[in-house]
Image (cartoon, rainbow, N blue to C red; front, side, top):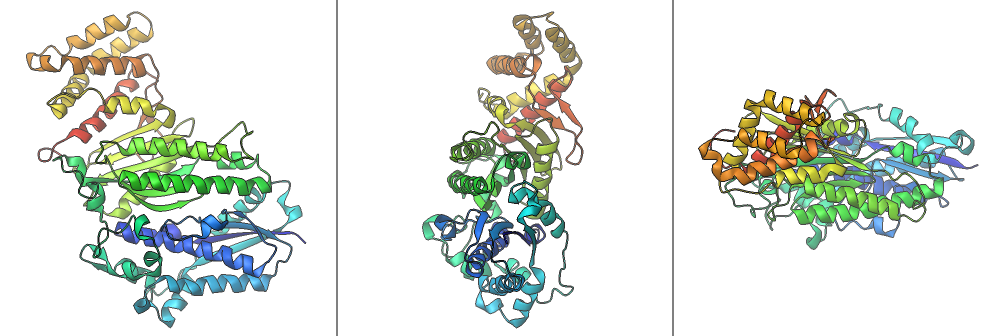
Length: 510
């Protein structure tokens, strides 16, 4: 009898919240990816006819030298040789073998027993008739969602080998992580964690792009945590047969590999790359002057291209997109806060707009002030144009002048916007009125900049009806949009505040 089996492995997020350094975050994530990899191997051993649909389990996925967790937390396979006892035995073996991921000095009988209780590996089995004409992922996913709510954690954490490893810091490195087999099997030329023979890259290193950013700008003390996830995956999976699920999984694998290369080349650190999910750390702007938003735009294109290139998917009318939660905060703030914010922002990117395929951005400044925006991926060029308005000698001061003036005369700008949208004034008349606001003698030197700002504002926000918006908070879907005459000014001002943040020099107001 043909059986379809779904396995879920956790608790990933609860574990990574204990991480206080980039390397610890990597280890926590890689631990579960490695457990999923070994589960796939055990499935093949236990059931010789097993067909693993997700994750893609080919020769290329079994290589572990790149240090990237390629296996997500759900495994879907089919077999005609299903045996409940074999299934329970292979899960127990995976749990016990997880101890081999830790350095020898942390492993004892109590640690092995703790991991058996701590690791949440649950499964569901359906007969072929129970799929109800759905592919295996769609049929099994609701049950796996429920199983993931079954968290049976140990009451006593005295033998919590995971916490002992994550908190085993020694100066700039993580002593236990460096001694762990997971770390030691990474190829030297692909290790995104290793700083030198003695240390691992820290948050401070990532923020200043490993010392390459030497300008005295505030942003070199800030870093970004980015969570990315495919959009409308359920809708897309509804169009696939079981054999096409495997091809889609392979497309995701190729995407993950290319995305990790881009992240490493940018100066970031990949924490997790499995299926359509990505989690990584990054400088806000790298040594070449490229922003993290440009990196995410490139990753979004990679996702579309790699999925579309899958041979069995090329004929599909709908190709899924990817959304991003980008949390930027000061290096002194706890890593777990940025992780939590990135997840909230990712949810906002998917639910805070009529359409998905967005970047939800928050810069939380050291002073406690925040700058927010939701930018549709197709409108990344608008964000880029605002951030790259022609530079002046007094960059920060010039941008501040635009922000201050537009805020001071916002009621007048609102009236001008209404007249423009009612076709009562054209671009020339609008620019003339706009420039009259900047008639102070000290502003004459920046006339070209003000005109460029006016042109961009008119083109994309006054008459262009940009879909970029400003959420009023991370926990609310209420937002100020560029679709109304007042909202478009708030949106443009927030993008200018983001530009100003990227230009701010050290010292002065935060």
